[in-house]
Length: 186
Image (tube, rainbow, N blue to C red; front, top):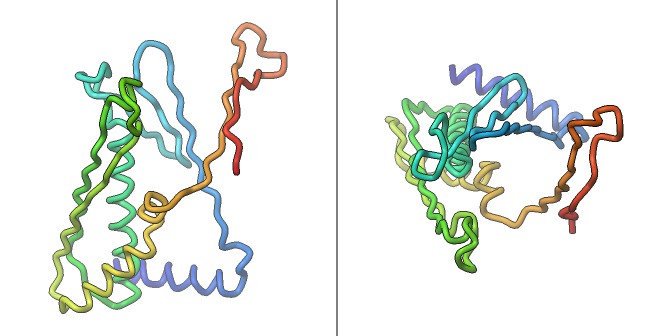
């Protein structure tokens, strides 16, 4: 499998070197919530993922909640980047595990105190099963920590913009929305 990964990464590098204008990508995800529960269905490419809250937070526990998905995204991205760099570096990695923890003060979510609504801290432990020399694994880890997109996104300020649109179900033929607010890009 690592030869397939190595070839895919090398082909991508070659393509971007030859056509740098295609290096910028846009990824998309859409989420939908219907009445009656916290359950959310997300559409990502051809995939569907369910998010919900645990019972003790008022959900129906049909899936992980969004902050758990964020931690899973960090772990999954790290593991993928480990596999990609290991393949290119010619390193054999038998298994990779990432165990992530996020520390959240629910008072921020519930508007009970002036504390952040999101994580105040995220930590993770990566376990790598490999017969490769420790120095090679250390070099690999440095590359991953420097180039993992999810980790990079979490560790620096990222421009976020958005808007709220109200759609009226009784008049679908009219313009579909009224904009209530926008979070402008700086």
